[in-house]
Length: 129
Image (cartoon, rainbow, N blue to C red):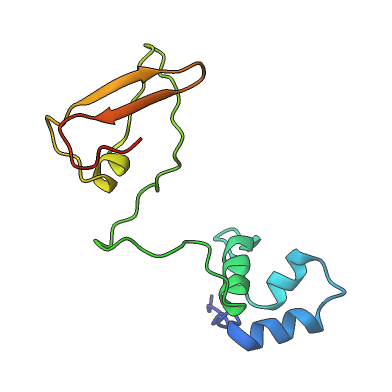
């Protein structure tokens, strides 16, 4: 049995032009026509929609990932929201403590409002509310 060489999927301007040309087809058919599919061991054709969508975004120069971090590692970005844990604790993540350049042992005064909790750093030049 000989293996048929698969064409490279279209990218960039060629991809955008082909998608425009195929506007009458479904999104799956467009992806397949642009080369975003594989054939499994069992001979089943699988359309890779995620790679197709990512190639379209890249061709249109749309960046969804944001800027990579300076250390090259991924990870979650700070959402500025936390959830009360099952044990009733609030955990403030490392993203926030790094952003504020906090060190182990830094102390805070906790003041409770009607619908908020305020942390005020003790013995700091950054004595802001």
